[in-house]
Every structure is written in C-alpha cells, then in structure tokens.
Image (cartoon, rainbow, N blue to C red):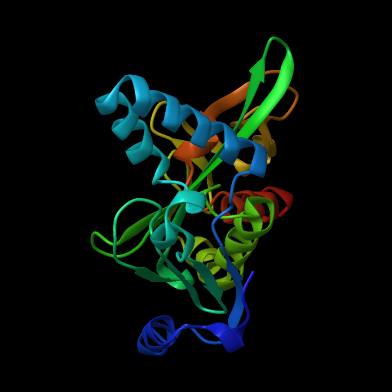
Length: 242
C-alpha cells in the first residue's frame, strides 16, 4: 500500500481534475510467491530449450504478472473520498470515477477442488456515465479491504439521494431489482409489497428476497447482476422495516 506522499503527479492531477478529494488508500498488484516464480522460470527455460514458440508464448503469458513485468508492477488502485483511480489489469491508460455516479457490480467466487476450498476470485465492475468503466480484480492486493470499502463509499454518497427518490414516489433501479415506495420488483416476478417482504439476504452468491412466512425465496438472482449491492440491501432493509 502507498500513501498520499507517494501519489504520482499523473494521479494527483487526475484526482484534482475530477475533484476526488483526499486519498483514502492505495493498493499495489499482488506478487506471486518465490516458489511459484522459481517454478515458472524453470518451466520457461525448459520450454524454450525444447519448443521455442511454446516457450515464448509461456513467457508472454507470464508478462501479465507483476513479478515478470515492471509495467504491471507499477500499476495502482487509488481510493479517494469521492472516487477512484485505477490502472486496468490489462492494457494501458488510467480510469477515474466518482462514487456518486458509479454502478458497482461484484462477483466473488471461491473454487472448490475435491471438496477442499481453493482460491477465491474477486471481480468488481465499476460503471460510470457514458462508456467509462473499470474492472478491478484480485490482481490488486487486499480485495477483502478495498472491495467492501468501495461498496461502503457508494452507500455513503448515493444512499440519501436513493432514499429520497423512493419516498418521493420514484423508482430506483439496481439491475435485477427495482425498489419503490410500494415494494421490490423484478422483471420476471413483478412486485412484492414491503408488507410481504421478510428480508433481502445474500446466500451462496445469490440475492434472495424472502416473502413473509415462506421458506423459499420469492426471487433469487446472482449477486453479479445487482448494481450497488450494499446500497440495495441497506435501502431494502430500511423500507421493509418501515
């Protein structure tokens, strides 16, 4: 992690241009361990000795890792009070987004190998106005920290406006779900009044809307299809309680 004192000029200028406010945290690419580095080097040398083209392709594939590519290692994810700046994992350039206009999608998957928990993949898609978007993955170290922090920033900056919109009789769209003063709606199920909503919860990678008195979900959708998940859950809980 870097600090505000090490924020490079490019990021500092971009943050000022978008009025992102104070830097809250910065995350670096996660390097692989020394054992894996040695294993990849051994495989590369042997492939080059036996098969030049496969060896070169393998080395080209390794260039996506920060251990084997200074350009990749120099990339950063910066979180500010009012937005983010990120270098995409693949390709060049830098993307800046403000929390107040972001639609944030998350998809967290833990692999199970022969019944044993394996690696977990983290994918967050931040979609801004127009065609501006960024995909942020476990390429950056600390997804258990920066992921919830981003969701919290969306709740903090968009929560009040979303609640006021609902109370004024408008609808707020969260991808798979739409919230209104009358209830929660989906395209397939229609609308469930708040008086019949027991809770909205996340289980096994899906968002379940539970009907009062029912054991099975009234509606179940993949977490990855719900925009601003934490804001949706917070707003739905408040409206159901009222």
